[in-house]
Length: 107
Image (cartoon, rainbow, N blue to C red; front, top):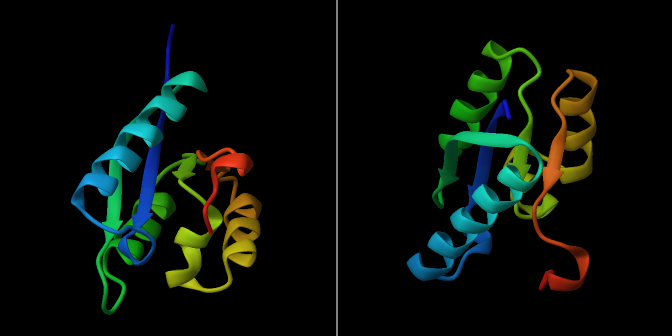
């Protein structure tokens, strides 16, 4: 079954430690696989000025409508208001998929 390439994004502002980061990466990968996607890269934004987020945007701009998988919309806050960023990406043909089910969200 062919899979569609996708990108992932995690902001460390919402991650407590390395163990949680690894668990979130696994969660993103499992979610992507369930939805017929293959994560080709997961960008991880460290505290400080955005760098991974800018690299992510560059990769999205260079792709042809590649989907983006995030744990929650909160992770997009480094780029601006999360729902506005999601809506902008959708207008640019990039679907934004949220990997965490609402009942599992902690923030």
